[in-house]
Image (cartoon, rainbow, N blue to C red):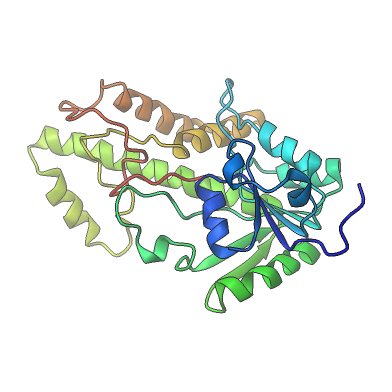
Length: 287
């Protein structure tokens, strides 16, 4: 198909939470979401954009790995100068897609969650302090030049290998999952000791070496759920096992969480519910 004389600058594929965040950054972007025709431009128009931000799901597959079928489908019809993955993908995916499709691929991990309470400014696209771009230097530089006029000079723009950026995203979500389970372990220990968990948690939080994020251990929602922590912990555990790495620690986090969420862990499960990544002071849905 012949390209238009002037290519649109930015296209966004997928208009869920992450796609909508991208539209805040690029309000003039063309959007395509096959499930949202009311907000979509023609697919061929979006395919021809110079920069395409891919914001489609990578759900947990039946075997626990990341289902990359939506990402691969989109990569098959885009004709962008640069394809920027916002979807969380296992290490090696960006490089593999580049080799298979001929695209210049960048991985930009997403951190701005979908919260059940008022979003802190520092957790918004405007307030988040850094941008991590994984890929070849020639294309990551182009993406920095595209983003910096919109996101401003105060952010830190890191350009790294795609594998480092992909693994970093999983490392962070696995860490948040571990914090949820750690706090629940100590909630159970506090109950056994006859101590007030919230008092113990506040005392523990006085130590400047620790973080209170994802440590609320809410009775209303034991463990962690939501759209991202379970699938990402599962995906990186499956990746490590396939690579021959001992991932027994990650497996233990997942097993403890399943026990909690089945109602067999806490002595007082409280009000049933699933508000997402419950270890945070509200649910964070991540991609």
